Length: 103
Image (cartoon, rainbow, N blue to C red; front, side):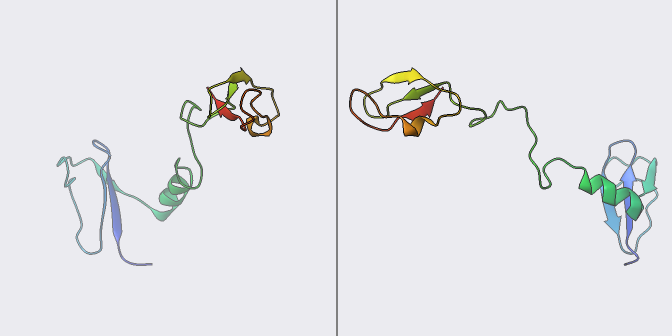
């Protein structure tokens, strides 16, 4: 462990550290409502942050969920997607090309 002090401002939420200097006010907003952060506070906070080893989201991003139809990339033929069967296993009845999933 080092003698580094970690601080947080209650007004703006700015966090900083200093190995030597003691602070009496926030260097960002100049508020005097600051406190030191202990190691116990830091560890659970870091472990619970989204984006550290897991993905968050609503499923609205591209690639989420199964395709709704199977489409031929060659001629544009479309057929209804059968749940549980990948589109690539089906062939286009018009040009014999493997189908792809599409929205």
